[in-house]
Length: 416
Image (cartoon, rainbow, N blue to C red):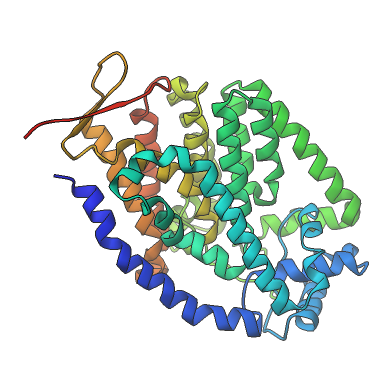
């Protein structure tokens, strides 16, 4: 029996149908009315190009420029990224919003194709189920689809992390760190990854990260200056807190599938916000140190990055649904490694030591569950923070399920 492969093939039509429905309902509104996250990125590029970089983090200026170059809306979507990323959208600001939206959609599709191509060697067992299954896993993962529809930059981070994984597989730790540092436009993901590698004493990786982090920070400082850099720091800490002013975009912490969302969802009505913040910080620090100490055998293998990506999402300060796009890397690698764990196959390493079948099965099914879990935003939008529970379980399973070293696996079918 092959329960998990058959289940994946069975739910594909359902997931594809939901994706098509999402595109039909969302795409026209995003294209014609500017109701998408690309709105803020496009306006930021326009502000830098037209000499208004000094107002990049002024929410009122953002509102004004978004209304002028995109279209009127009730409130601005705040640009909460380092200023260096606004430079990437300067060329798009030369186009009309609609044309730029379609152009960036095309760019995102190219980036997604590149990420798929890079990760393709890590999906050989998934291809054995059906040759096109790896492609569809990329297309039906809802955070990916949402990033495409919203005109988000999460797919760029996915590509950088995939390239970093390959660099680690080739023993190029410094290059991997440089790639992660370039992803600081999503610092809530990039910084915890770097901290874990620092705790693991991966000095070359962290040196590469520090190098690119200093470079993009210097570029950002040159673009907006000290005053706006300080304003950017304040806007980061105000995300999802009572510090946000009335003009800022209200973000429900309960839709964050991380520790912060879980703690807020369970205790937000019982404890003051300052206690929620303190508890979140303590819990996040504890998880980072626990992962660093509990996974000593993965420190010198590419599995370390797979685990670090997962842990970074768990402890991230804020986490939008499209930010979960990078979770696809741990999902497909784990799923590929253990997809036949509940079937008539056993996996043996070169020393003929059978791995833990129960743990392998749990890894496979948890990774498959996380593939579908983001769909909970439609079923339980007010309790989406509960998705952090299978994510935390997945993190624990990753610590225990991967072998000590990367060794080729031999899949042997059992008769009967």
